[in-house]
Image (tube, rainbow, N blue to C red):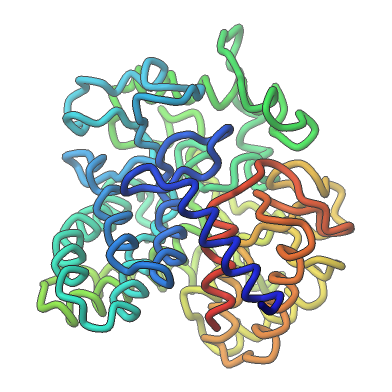
Length: 423
């Protein structure tokens, strides 16, 4: 058996080991529930093993959908401790919350429609897969609509996050200034993450004080659509804008293939791309950026998130600028660092403040191919697989040494390795 065949076999075994009867836990010890974008990335891997199981992953994600369209970032199962749990979120029995499912009140980046398209393309006309995906199209459309209907209070056409967890990039320097304005006061909570993983690789106490404060505020505000004057944090997220723009295109493709209407998707995509073209583009620095809706000011911080409009498909000149930034400012022995190595904020082992993440690499590889940069995409794919082969299926990696960090047996690292191995 060749080295890549061994890697594929190990990745399949990990997915099966993290399977909880229809959804995949990211990591059994640290993350023992269903996470939103983790499940979508897992579906992309599962499609190479069992397309029906991949479609089931997306079906299970929809069980947590709120009445207004939100698909939460966590759906809790009865087993496995995690903080904050359902008691802290205060969503059980809340108006509009999903019945029969304990869930959080915030969301995560909308990769699911892209996953659905990829699962459908791999299914070979399997009617059971088509039936399952047909059932999720409407729910995904409601979620996409929710982003712009409830999370765009300034009319930029770019969805805003109310919590760093929604970005999927929890403690990124992108949020430092906005988080520094929050004064949480004395707040009690219990952390378990830094008893499972080295505390030097996790967000700090300063971060967690504010994370829990925002969870409490969301409940105090009745989970209402956020406004700049009432929300502790409200930032138009360039990465979510790009991922959603791609997701709208993929949702239309799935709907067309299955004969299911996707009302509003094309109009929403046009609005999202216009936001990338205008308020989220920094002409002076020739890069994309987030926008703080409370101060109504752009956030000029170097972070890999600013490169993700490649994934959406942007004009050729801008794609070229992003490709150049990727090759220069984000160069590293084991790319792609979440923060440039020379940046004062860089910390190679602390979560989203420097480490390399396989899901980000995967989106950049997809974006490079879309931009016609096949050579760069192939090189990044090969380097990513080499990193996983050397260090294992870790949550993230030190971009200088290639050492694995965070959780072990991490599901999306295995799932996306399978996708990269399949070419």
